[in-house]
Length: 151
Picture 1 (cartoon, rainbow, N blue to C red):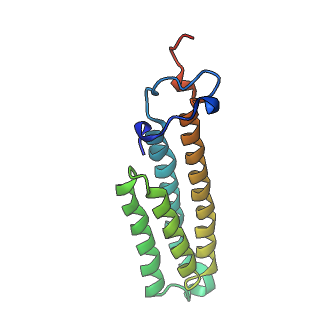
Picture 2 (cartoon, rainbow, N blue to C red):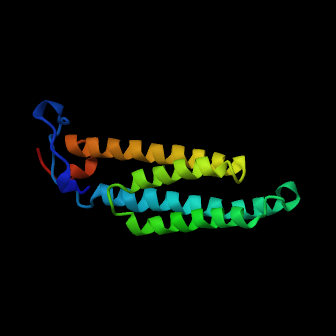
Picture 3 (cartoon, rainbow, N blue to C red):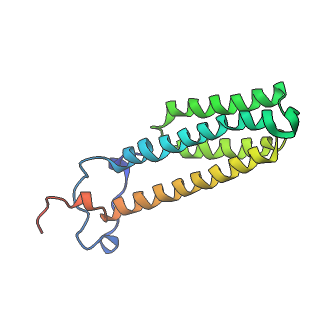
């Protein structure tokens, strides 16, 4: 979604300064660039740390080929999601991967599922923050919409 795609709120829902003008930088692009990319990076690093955990827990009994393939596949899937960061549905895709990986993670170890649940909550927070940002844009509450305007 781009700034131009956001419908303007009705007059009674607008902020005290009105709708303002188009921000100099699109906050939705910045949101995707910073929040989503940094979240994916943190999750990939955490998944990389699962590999030594599998090696060390239970005297290495979890260090099996299917478990290693599953974790490496999760890392590759998360890395591949960097290619679609500009799409409006990327947060939904990431959340769907969290749910599927969380369910399948029980077959590897419960700690993998807990990682997916924690990051699933992070992505739910990101979806909420994005909806708040869109609503603030729609009503004209962002400071950058009023910089340089004289009332």
